[in-house]
Image 1: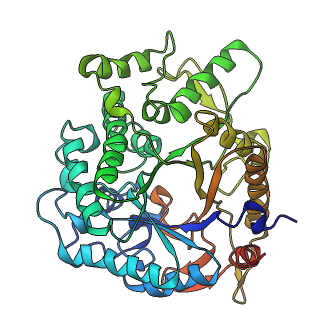
Image 2 (image 1 turned 180 degrees about the horizontal axis):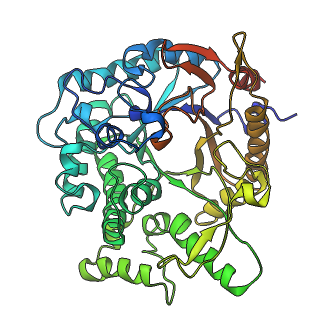
Length: 446
């Protein structure tokens, strides 16, 4: 049986949450509206009309929820700062009550012996800035720099661990090309502009933190999925390669100073390269992060589809292929997870790797006050074993953060998809620790 001590005494065991998914209190104490407040208020954008207005009520219940994280045995608490609590209009005046809230949250973490990891951007752009173009605007870098600077100067004396962006591929694709997430925009031009600005922002955010926070430990997080061709046909292999460039290479390679990926005949990349050719941005996209955050929720099997513009690829779902999957339909494949850890480490083997999120949604059933989520426990056992094997094979793996402490507002899924180690009754806000939470407590004691 794998034990937490097998990972070493200095391994970072954490649990993660995000402001727009947990805090609620969306319009109190001077907070401005975010793109998710606006997007979720539109009919049909989230399942059953779920909105982040109250969420888990973490804004008022943070002390009790931190006690839960502590009781489960975690040593690290990863959370994000809501941009609109700090700067309600995105720029300009600061909001003292919002700034004070995160001071109280940080102080409570430190009092409990929980090491705070701050995520600066976890998908909740101020709506006021979206009206001016959002992530597609040439002013984005100026706006983001202001936000990062305020946070670094306010909290840098207490917090040394920082994550600049959460999954830039996620919010640029889903929010600015496919329209499935906030702000709901469509089209390739929106996507490419958002990608380029996010690439610049992750590096600029790192530079600001380096200059403002003494002894800072700085990283950023990348979603990643192994791309497996459906058949051995050259067309399917080429389709998987194109998907791999977009989902796995597009943001990390510029950060490492490699610029955007190249592939002859891939018209989408040709359009993206026009940005760097015009403005010589390659150096500005580079930053020497202390750690790379990896968030791998599923592997993907893809095949060629000529109808799909540019990418000419489509997923062959796990349900269709009848392989193990979560309630989201995401393939469960711990061996693939192991390979992705090694692949990201191979960019620079000396670089620290942190699994900054890991978890799964399964349909939970509350029976007589008990949630026996055996599938989630098995998931963590398998994926932690895969992580251990990667570390044993030489990967400089430094931490694993479980997603997530408690069931929350899961973006376009509303409140239907539950990833938490703690069940939340969203009508009463009653918390119930799932068996997976008790499993973590036992594991972390080992």
